[in-house]
Image (cartoon, rainbow, N blue to C red):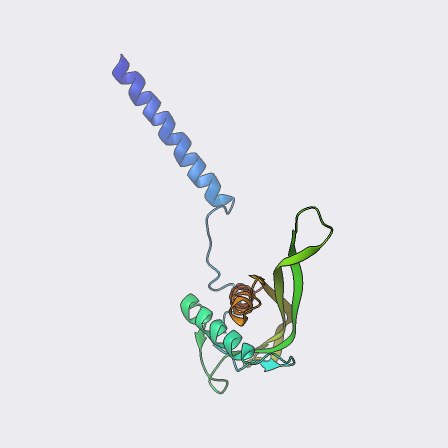
Length: 180
């Protein structure tokens, strides 16, 4: 008798698990891929060196390089030069902002000092279909990172730059390959 109850219980558990699996798939709860979500004729993309409208040196090279690397790792669109690409992603670094982000107090005095800064990079982008000769999208995108300003060393600020560039690259990749 216990044998039949165990089998019935196992069947019920299996049916429930299978039902949940199917329902979660129908609800879109599984991780999905962006491949094919953009224009279907675009297989290659050119990413020329971003323009720089700021006084920051070397940042646009790093943004461009990290963005190209993100596309290569994603592999949804192949990197090509502008003469052979289906689309091009032009970019221009418009602004770099350092804004106090966290503060630390000193005892019971009313004097406060900045603990961390938020470094924001604002980039103007245009994703252009070279085959159809039309703009797919044009947007401003912001990436940001934080850095400790305790010593005031350039290395601390560079950490904020890298974090901001990583976020920019990820957001731009998603915008481009997802068709949003």
